Amino acid sequence: MTLKKLSSLEYLSALCLDVDDAGLPTPASLADMCRRAVWRWGICPRATLTKFVLERLRAGRLDDEGAKERLKEVIATLIEFGDLVDVWTAAGKRIARAQACWIRLDDGVAVVSGTLPSSVLGPGFESSAPNDLARRFDPGALTALVALREHGVRERSLSDWLGALGYVRWLNERGEGPYGPIESLWKMLEEEVDSDGVRLSNVDGVWALGGDPGQFFGRAGGDPGKTGRWVTPEAEGCWLAKRAGYGEQKKPLAISVSSSGETRGIDLNSDGEFGWAMIARGCALGEREVISARPVGEDYELQVSFPLPVQVRRLMRLFGVPSEERPWSWSLRGSLLPVVTRSFSQVGVDVID
Image (tube, rainbow, N blue to C red):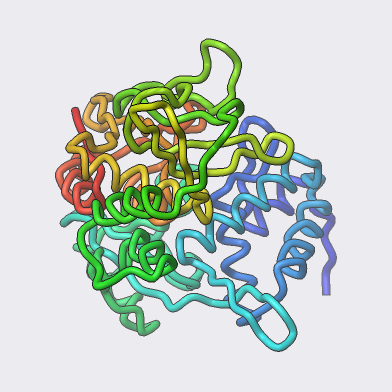
């Protein structure tokens, strides 16, 4: 046996780890290392997966805080996207393989979802950018389809992959049914505020979400000039709002302001419910939340104007690639704009160009 001393670059290349201009491992290469590990183990604690990857980064001198934070974000995104899955066992919470499938976006682009490393599939399955965690391929390529069939990976429709829209969960949490369209969530919250809302004697530290869809969103309780759509709850009507919580946290709620100025409110379960309630309110009032599409050569840049609920963010990650420079921006292949417009319309959001 011959032993060879490897340089840091040779070592990282052997691990299929790419490094960006900031000297950090790229999200795409970190994601594939995580998939490979879980594919081999089947199931493991998150701490074990994190330790496994960090040990290899340390050997390549890439174990600084920036790399650790990026790994944390990558693992969370893989779970959110469906490439890995959180499961509960008798021993506690674990990360496990997710069933692999592929989704056709158009005649020239498809995406593999689930725990199946790119190395298993071979050439032709790759991310379109260093920060793109989705593995894309040409569904017209026979070699790609043969490789998928050999591993029992079947095509799923986009709607089947996405599952029931998230607003249904929040209707269920509040004991409502049968389930109607998205706007039924907002109508239910309006009724609940009217019937069960608690009077808010002090509205200091309460900010209502106003403004028009597409405007700068801002931050509730932010610095002057940076509050965006957040206003003092004075206008009559039913609104989504945030109120001061612990530290920097803001607690979501729905409020109603009467003609006499009395304000009543109910707490929402989470920011997830807040996100779907925001989409539902826009649908109910005919002022749907929007995503702007700006042409960039033959492609598009999608500019999101509001915080996306997890399921909608998952859809965005399927189609686009997050910008490394502009927050809330995604790059999109030009041919995908029609299917993106249709898909987001079905979740209550308009894409405008």
